[in-house]
Length: 453
Image 1 (cartoon, rainbow, N blue to C red):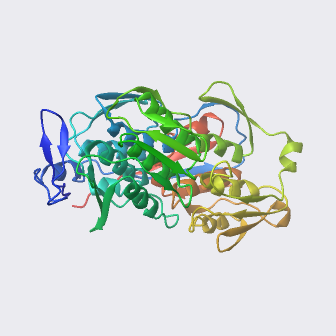
Image 2: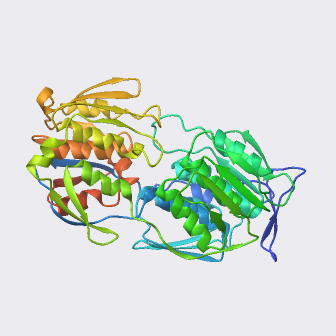
Image 3: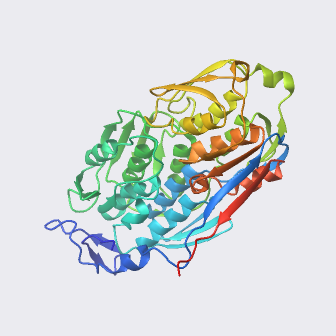
């Protein structure tokens, strides 16, 4: 059973009043989460696989879905807003559906259809989202900032997401403390409340590392704090900028988005806006990693064609190191590795963001890639050094690694079967159908659960 926290709710003012004498002990009934979080036994998710036949050339037009990373943060940001937010271009992926469940477990009304999502937060009845849902996606933890900002307290389970290395939350905790929050870890949950019993207060905080998640969480928390907040050494990713635009359209005052310093003037109340999510740059760049020439025809549509032979042959012997924006994105590291296996020369790929983001290498090696790993650095031998890709059965163990396996399978000779497709579906909407429309020979396998007599 998912337990909720103690809070006292004034139905007339729609304001949560924290019990500072006994924080985090719930007066709300502890049964409503059990209904929202209980796994369904009627519609178990099927086990999906992908079958690819290599050798196809991609061409045509393709629509790029809304950004997963932007959508998750902005969905959390709707908790800062009273009334209804109307969002466009939300990708239909398992991570956003899990985020809907997290919001609904708080009492939020969510309606979604064809990328259009309305979020009505006026029915919020708790400040503890369902722990089981939060543990399914890293973005679920972002709600701690908006809940603290609007209601003065929050209890949020430690986050989940892909197993790509340690992703500590100390920046989140110290940043919230700098805004006047008392934060404790209890039984795998972060329990926080405003020390003054009302709301957060503006402050100054320097991030030791420009973490995207910490920047977004603290930005949302500061948007309704009393006074002015200055955040230094913040993340500058386009998704962070998108969240700042959403908050500003909601009535917040966030300045400096896209730079390494944010100045945020707190507001007493934010209102739900109408807002369109930016396209997913990682999905678009994945097609570049497939060795394609890309022309943008509209904001969400790309024209895809094969690279001319002389240009394709010139891609060789590169040294790539991931880092915070505007450096090479860590989310594209597995895909660029798949591309480099199909080119000439020796290449080096260094991962400096996550300490366990080399799990896809073993699966790429099964396909014939000559890759050696030393710590967080991969040494890749191209085709002229013995890398020859042949189809086999591999397994996706995380989202971006799964995308790399698709690219390698399309370049391999013969048939490749990819298991663990649920990881890929977390972040890519209808990826197999989009690739098929561009000429890839790919189809999805669905194994239905076996009923026990």
